[in-house]
Amino acid sequence: MASLQQASNRLTLSVIVPVYNEKDTVAEVLRRVAATGLPHEIIVVDDGSTDGTRTVLQRLQDEGLIPGLKVVFHERNQGKGAAVRTGFQHATGEVLLIQDADLEYDPEHYPLLLEPIRKGLADVVYGSRFLGAPRRPILFWNMVANKILTLVTNILYNTILSDMETGYKVFRREVIEHMPLHARGFEFEPEFTAKVLKRGYRIFEVPIAFNPRDYTEGKKIKARDGFVALWTLLKYRFVD
Image (tube, rainbow, N blue to C red; front, side, top):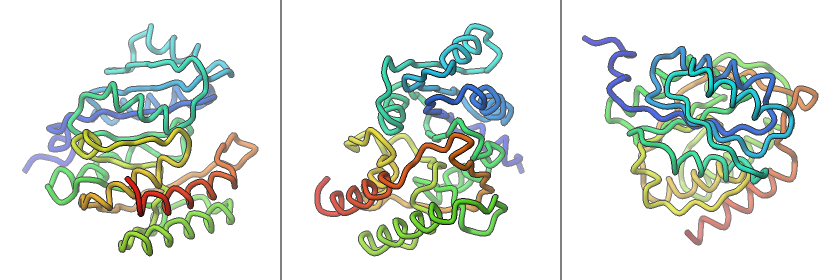
């Protein structure tokens, strides 16, 4: 029987990396993504960075040492959701995977994330931070907010997700081909989840290790984003 990595390689995988002011981590993230040997292409969307990230990305692109690397530059900051949607427009793979650029999520999990899709068991896979894998125990109130938003998702959409807000979302490209997505910021996660659930796509969750940053290390999501996410879940329960 072929190994999991060999089987995963039969799926053309586009990894989408939204980036904003991550000059200290983006090169290492891209190195780890490429080291998996799985991506057909790595699409980095720089969302108007001002800290030198753009220079790092231009150098990486010019050197040609990251296989399949494509870099797209937003001239101004528009938000994570806008960057992800730009990535979708440039992706050509059968399967799309969203990868943050801050080292909180480790690409070593790619084979595990791809397995349910490879086996035909799922259209969408979420990497859950709350299914027992190792994690760095910080930011209690962020965890509480995540739990509340996931609970609201489960109530509104009659499901049993453990981690709606996860940054690791993997899916077949046809999932988004006719899905109108409007999020410009962090509300991408609830909008995407709401529309996946309303359309009846099969979601699997797999456990992933998680190494969160604190705010002194550059974490960007704020309390306001939690209220925006809650409103997004309520809105898309009743409209598309």
